[in-house]
Length: 254
Ligand code: PGA
Picture 1: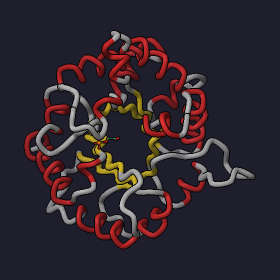
Picture 2: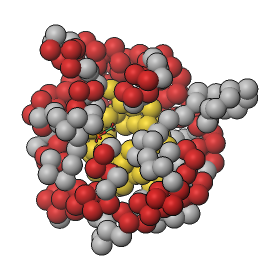
Picture 3: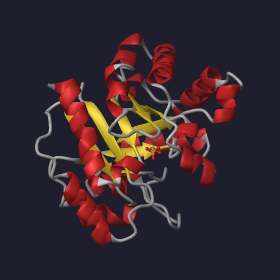
């Protein structure tokens, strides 16, 4: 299985010129291992303009709507994303849940439409600080994953990628310790085994996200067994992002 590094640019940068510069700069990485897949998720408005600037990185989106088309002002459908060349789509990021009140029922619909359109959905799950303090991690993850995957068939399950992103670790510099993240990775595998099968749980790519940078990223893969990373802040700085990719290629893949 390929190691997957997903750059989530969020609502950045503020001009297309900067977006183009950022994409071109990160693709200046000297070499990219064959078993490393890098996905870049820019804001919607830049997707079509950047699409032909992609060389060996893959195009992803940060969100999608659950209907194909129609009177839904302001929305962008999975079909449109597929048409513009997206391979991946992030679904259920905690910022969408927090600021746009997305529920796991909504996320379930988005997952289904992404799968229908042959996009690989990256389903984000994770607890808040308060939930962690109260010992609710297993309960929260169980319900987040089970509701999000409701009605999804096992044959489609293997298209899904799950990203464990503890809410308290996102954008705070307070990354989850790899050994704690590993426990949650194993919990996610258990939930998937119960829902589908052990075979599928073993094949599923589980990523870690939350204050990942070039100094800590490799430990989630090497020590905690994650198949990849979801990177926010560190993906906006070309030098830092290349350092991160190289740290992973250097320590792991060679
Ligand atoms: P961060 O964001 O790396 O800036 O913490 C990660 C994410 O939200 O996907």
